[in-house]
Amino acid sequence: MTKKQRAETVLTELEKLYPQVPVPLDHTDPFTLLVAVALSAQTTDKKVNQVTPDLFHVAGTPQRMAKLEVFEIKELIKEIGLSNQKAKNLKRMAELLMEKHDGIVPQTYEELEALPGVGHKTASVVMSQAFGFPAFPVDTHIHRLMTKWKLTSGKNVVETEKDAKSLWPATAWNKLHLQIIYYGREYSPARGKGEKDFITKMLFEK
Image (cartoon, rainbow, N blue to C red; front, side):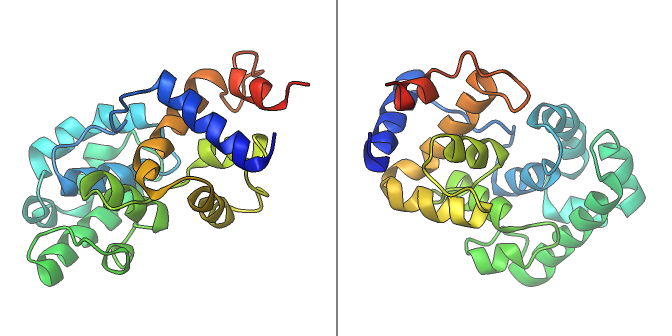
């Protein structure tokens, strides 16, 4: 199989497996999605979803988040890794949204990535899932699987994102990045032996 054929096979098989792909992080609007994605760094989505209901009950808007003290935010997210830094980031993020954007989550990468705790991946998730812009956020599952499928050199996530965007049409990006994440979790976990990983076997069988 050529690289292009492998990419087409991946797209076809994932569409069969996951015709519908809900966003793994629970949210109700662009702000709560932004917060949830920022919290998810080095933490599981499951853990974030356990913590955010109480957080959003108290501070589900930039206005309410900005009024909290850092220690109050930390208390609400203490079960999440890096909670000290994340609490500081959420406080300042909310303040900047109020100061510079009238409390509205901006719709450009440049403005999103200027917010504390918001890197390119977080901005890409918000741009794709909250606003519908074509984006291909790359997490560890995607980076690992695309390397395994020989669809990228695997040097870094920047290269992986670039390769993904060149292999698949922009119309598929927003859904496909989630499909790969779901596949990685279910069929090819990082610490698993990969017996269930039928796509890899399909791509490289003799």
